Amino acid sequence: RTIHEFRPGELPPRATIIEAIDAARWAPNHHLTEPWHFYLLGPETIREIVNLNTGIVKINKGDKAAAIKQERWSAIPGWLVMTCDRSEDDLRAREDYAACCCAAQNMMLYLYNAGIGVKWTTGDVTRDPRFYDLIWADPSAEEVVGLFWYGYADVIPTASRKPAGQLMVELP
Image 1 (tube, rainbow, N blue to C red):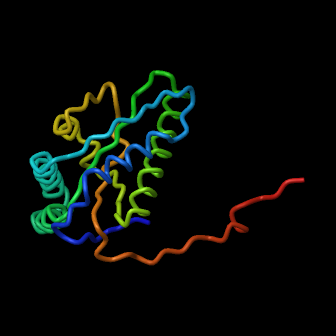
Image 2: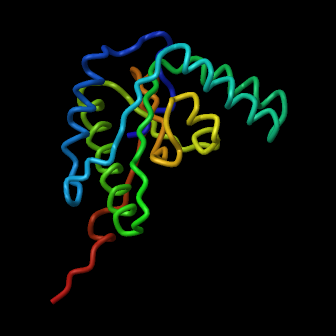
């Protein structure tokens, strides 16, 4: 469940986040490549990313949108980035990215079970070369899978999904 609104100023325990990353690393991955890397962001890095994103939004959507985005992003309690090893082999790159998505799901389910909400985002800022500099990652060696915001949910949105019967085909 994606959480969009977090209670301000309530950062979940670091130990719980580490436990969630521990759960993430058990995701299935072909040839046990373990292609994921996790960056737990501190206040200084978060501020720099908020400022980078504010600048991007300002250029694309103007001052008002940038101010709104800056205020919203500045209130998000916890930040984590996951990257995936890059590979010259197309099949391995695809399998490794899929494994990272499984790891993300493991992490998010662990946190949800611990009462911590998460939002997985892949906005423009995560594709900006300056983002890699801010998280000290080498863009030639790894790619951002997602920026994960976490904290205690202020609002838990309702969600619905199609019934399983609409999603499957039974073959003879």
